[in-house]
Every structure is written in C-alpha cells, then in structure tokens.
Length: 183
Image 1 (cartoon, helix red, strand yellow):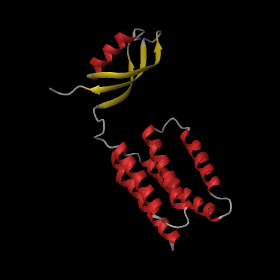
Image 2 (cartoon, rainbow, N blue to C red; image 1 turned 45 degrees about the vertical axis):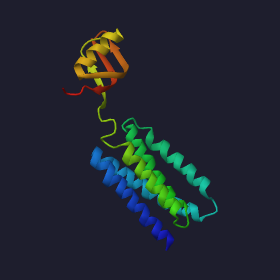
Image 3 (cartoon, helix red, strand yellow; image 1 turned 135 degrees about the horizontal axis):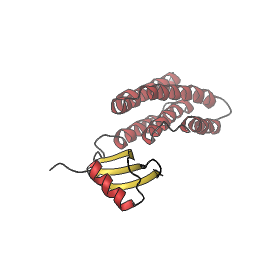
C-alpha cells in the first residue's frame, strides 16, 4: 500500500509542477510530455531498482545517464533544464524509498517550491535576455553597448558577441539588460 501512496504523491507532485507551474508560465507543450514521461519512467525504474539488491547507486547512475542524453540538445533553455531535473528528482524520490515518509514528501514539496519561487515571473521581471542580430558590424564594444541600450530601451548588464560578419555587415549578440522604468 505504501508503494501506491508513493505513486499517488509523485503523480500529484509532477502534475502540480508541470500543469500548475511550468505550462502556465512557459506554454511549451512538448516539454510537458517530456517532464511527465521522464518522471513516470524514472519512478517506475527507481521502484524496481529500489526493491532489488542493485540499490540506489544504480538509480543515481540512471539519473545521470538520463540527464545527459536529453540535455545535450540546444533547444532546451536553462529554466527548462531545472524543470527536467525536478521531474527526474521527483520520480527518484518517490521510487527509491520503500516507505512513504515525511522526509520524502517534504523533499518533493521543497523541489516544487524551489521552482515555483525561482522561476516566478515577478522575480527579477525587469531583467531581460535577447539574442539580437544587428545590421551593422560592430567591432567597438562601447559603440555596440550604446546602440543596444538605445535599441532595447534599457541598461545593458551583460553582452556577449556571438559573431561579427564584416562581409555582410552584421553582428549577432546575446544581451542581458534591465528595462528602463517608464516615467
């Protein structure tokens, strides 16, 4: 019966994380499927590993292998990596423990709460990030910074030039900035 309770708690936790926090904020349907599939798959695998003599070491190794396989894609953003790891962790927490304990339940709540707060839209909402392609080849960082501040109407806090094409007269830059407050 405690295994069934662990499964129910895990399903409730991943549903809250995916449908209550992630999707309303980011609207990526493909990652909803990934989070649910990874979580339930890890839960099932961890429950089997937890009940065998192989133990938690193999389960944690599986956690690492699963993480590496999917996270090599350049299409997944850093906040999505956090949700991905949370989905893995929730499955492992529920699956490796033979008895549902307050510690496991509390850790699951802690994982969800950390993502709720850390990815909240109000947290640092004035900070923005963009990849911008400009129709000029900037080789002077100060001129580039000044142009981006005017263009983006904010204070540049970090910029990284990805490419400067002197032939086609373009510059691609990753820029992080603080939006100017409307007066």
